[in-house]
Image (tube, rainbow, N blue to C red; front, side, top):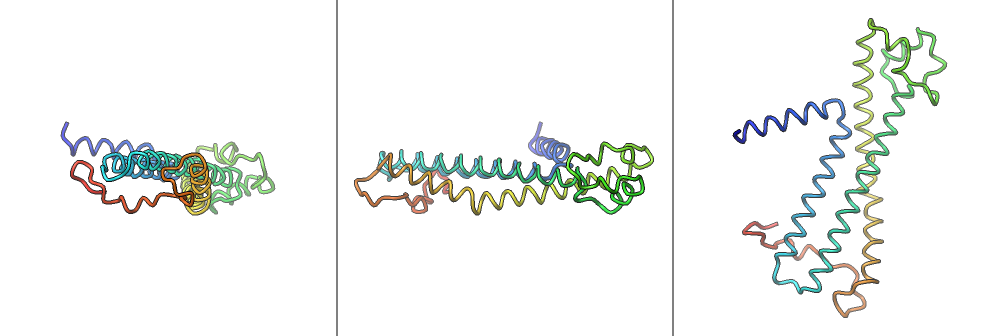
Length: 202
């Protein structure tokens, strides 16, 4: 199997798996991005002979902790906000006009948006003649879930993860001191960004 064929199979699998679930695709790629970038940073630190061994150990622990916080925060809050989006559509609080109109004509107008109401589990949506409504509903659900996942990712990246990382750095400061400087707070990793990994700079 050549590279092009393998790449096509991967793309086909991604398309089949995530075509109706863009929200999960966004979360998955975000998690992979954090994992790969942190992995490269850790390798760079480990390979850099200019860094003191004690300081290197601290930096790797710091980077691993940051990576886990970023990944878990994105996963948890991305999934949570995506789930909220799912509920908004499945209960009918947000619906495409075609579906809302059909439900109202079916005598379900007073139930739309109520807790416990399931749009899909109605005679209107189960009617074979209304197959087009299922497509409209699925498209709406996909879009709202995607917005939810993006919202959770933004919340995680801009607020939750930074707070957790700062708390982790504070804990590391109190428990492990790579230098004798008591004012040491957090190693600046940027000065090591040109670390050479097998001839490749990161």
